[in-house]
Amino acid sequence: MRYMMKNRSALFALLAVLTYAALATGCASSCRLNRPAAVPEIRQGILVGYLPPTALPNSFALISPPPAAGSVALANDEEAGRKALALRGTPRWTLAIEDADLRQAAGTFSCAVDAPVTEQETPRLHMLMRRASIDAGRSTSAAKDYYSRPRPFMVNNEPICTPGEEESLRKNGSYPSGHAAIGWALALILTEIVPERTDAILARGRALGESRVICNVHWQSDVVEGRFMGAGAVARLHADAMFRADLEAAKAELAAVRAKGLKPQRDCAAEAATLAK
Image 1 (tube, helix red, strand yellow):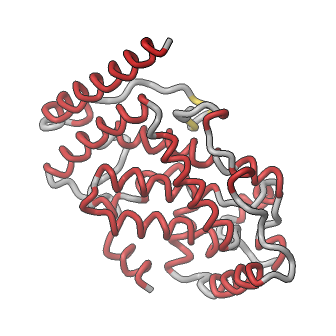
Image 2 (cartoon, rainbow, N blue to C red):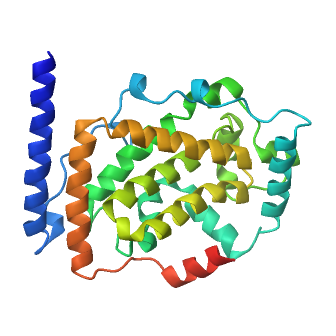
């Protein structure tokens, strides 16, 4: 069995190298010709991740309970929430609405990597990010289900940035934040793919988590522990041979796109100005 696993890992490594080489040449004409194989869906539009449930980091075992009533930590959460509510109606509130849609999470980082991250231009990277998002988000489930922490809008009775989601959010625990886990996981993965853009990528990943506080759907401590779980998920993903192979293919693909000088399909100047405030 050990011999078979060793050979399997070697095979995936070889496939990664061959895929990298093929993309490096094929993308020179069109990356669209090198589309990834189809991946099964959990439900419509939601892909299967890389990891089985038993391989995911256990958030209940890894993080402490949410801040207790009367604690300094809870007071800090409440103060961060009050400051965030003051941003309602501003460009930062609008950006938080965009960040709430995880179907667009891959494209969220286009400005940070200075290239389009789309299913059309970077199909392998787009697929990698969609699958890794599932693993990062699911890593928060155990603690979410156990603690069932009420979300800020359930306490302060203030509006949220995505009112159509209010009913479902009331049934889903606040601690830790799945969005923050996903944003941070994707940021860490992208820093490996485009290391020269590390600061911009990490800043965008951090901002995606902070958007949840601005939206009045998460406490600051939810976001902090969400980032921790996102990092744990990425660490575990690196032990998966298929993830590593896809990571190498995505590196080659994005390098080819950037070499062609393709630019993000977002208003990066406006985004930068909004996040700088």
